[in-house]
Length: 134
Image (cartoon, rainbow, N blue to C red; front, side, top):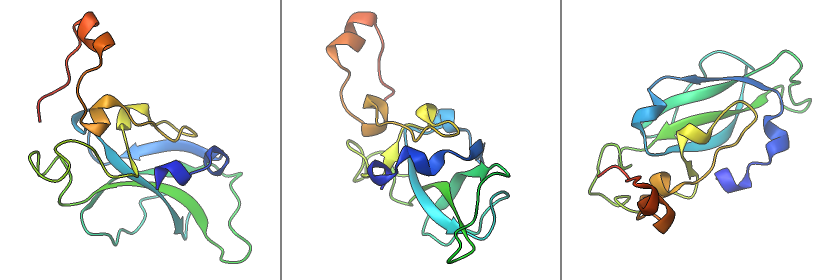
């Protein structure tokens, strides 16, 4: 879950590689996976699809116990909002979901009104900013 990711676990990230345009996604799920390499496209074994992943710099050290690195993987499930706009996440979002526009190397990403599918805040209305329709 994204809320459980400690920023110190991201300190060696040097790049986020997107496989899909993050501007077109209201949210992505993020998770720290144990992977056998610090760079390159990781294997993917979840239901749904991988939409991005983090690349670690050369100073990142593998776990002495497992020989693996913890890297972020961004993904979407088949029942997420991008595939089922009127589905279970028409409003709200999974607990590990964050707005991909708030993600950067070493930055874990944030929940936003857009990612959570909520109504526009009074400040947004006052500024004339509207949320996209799902």
